[in-house]
Amino acid sequence: MFGGFGPIVLGIIYFVLSKTINELSLDGSEALLGIVSTYLLAFVQAGVSVFNQIEHWSVPKSLFCHFGSLYAVYVFFYVVNSWIPFEWGVIGIFTAIFIVTYFIIWFTVYFVVKSTKKKLNSALG
Image 1 (cartoon, rainbow, N blue to C red):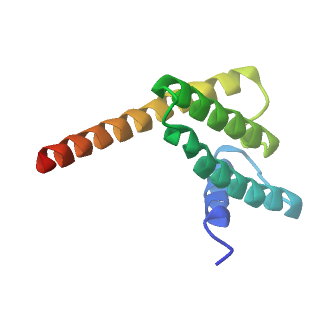
Image 2 (image 1 turned 180 degrees about the vertical axis):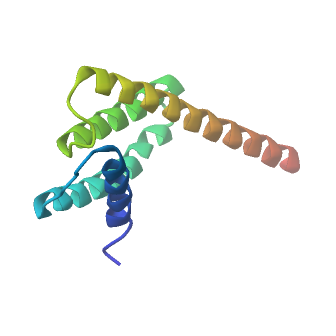
Image 3 (image 1 turned 90 degrees about the vertical axis):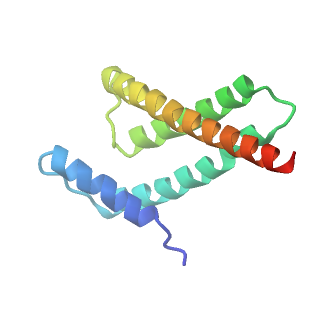
C-alpha cells in the first residue's frame, strides 16, 4: 500500500537515464532521494490543483500560480536528483519542453471541460 508508484516512476527514470548516460551507477542514498522526490512531486502535483479551484481568481492568475509552482518544484527536484544537469542550456531545453507539454495538457483539459459543460447545460435546458 505505501509503495505506490514512486519506485516505479523512479525505475522508469533511471532506466531512461541508463540508456542515455554511459556507465550510470546508483548508490542507496541516490535511490532513496529519487523515491522520496517522486513522492514529493506527486504530492505537489496534487496540491497545486487548488489554484484552479479558487473561484475569485482569474484564469490567468490561477494558471500562472499553478504553472509557476509546478515548474519551480520540477526544476528543483530534477537538478537535485541529477536527472538534468545544472546547466543553463539544459534547463532552457527542459523549460521549453515543460512549457509545451504543460499547455498541451492544459488546453486539452480546458476544451474537454468546456465541451462537457456545454453538453450538460444543453441536456438540462
